[in-house]
Each structure stands twice: as structure tokens, then as C-alpha cells.
Length: 123
Image (tube, rainbow, N blue to C red; front, side, top):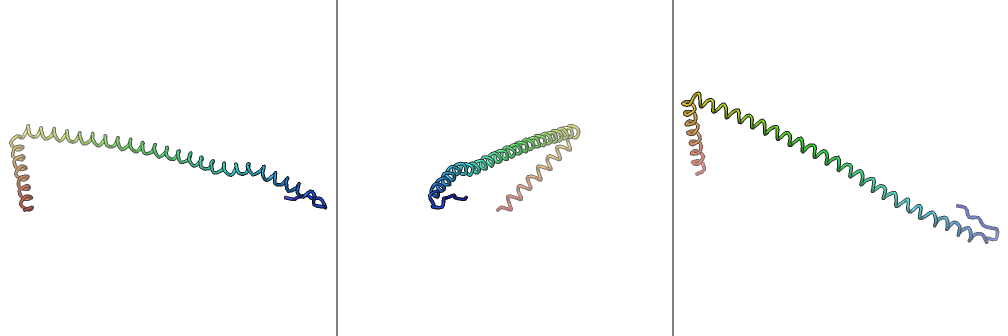
């Protein structure tokens, strides 16, 4: 910035005053721009974070829904297998009652033997 002054220096104080006025007038505008920039940046960051959180929430909800659906499907399949096994067992008992009774007795004897062995091994 060039300060104009007369040969005797009498214009120098006026030039300094004008320059100071220009600096003072431009300072609030520059300060506002300086302070607005971080606030805009913070607002942009807040918006971006909000968008990211919304997207993450949507993804979690989607994964949760898919997990719940998978559990329902697995539960249904297990129920169907159990029903089928029960039906097959009842059918076998109806057609072969003596064999079913002998198998049940043998299974009971094996279970009792295992319980007895486990008791004795603890003592």
C-alpha cells in the first residue's frame, strides 16, 4: 500500500488515517469470512457425519432384518425335521412295537451304565 504525501509531509497523517480506515473496514469482513469458514466446515462435517450415521443405521437395520429372517428360516427347518423324526418314530413303534420296546430298554440300560461310570469316576 502506497502512502501519498506532500513534499512537506503534511499529507502523511491523512494518508495514514485513510489506510487505517480501509484496514478497519476490511477487518470485520475478513474476520467474518474467517469465522464463517470454520463454522461452514463444521456444519458440512456435521451433515456428512449425520449422513454416514443414517447410512450405518440403515445398514444395521438391514442386517438385523436379514438375521431375523435367517433365524426364522432355520427355526422352521428344525421344526420340520423334528416333526418328521417324530412321525417316523411313531410309525416305527406302530409297525414294530416289540423291537421299539427292546431298543428303548437297551438305550435306557446304556444311559444308566454311563451315569454309573461317571459317578464312580468322580469319587
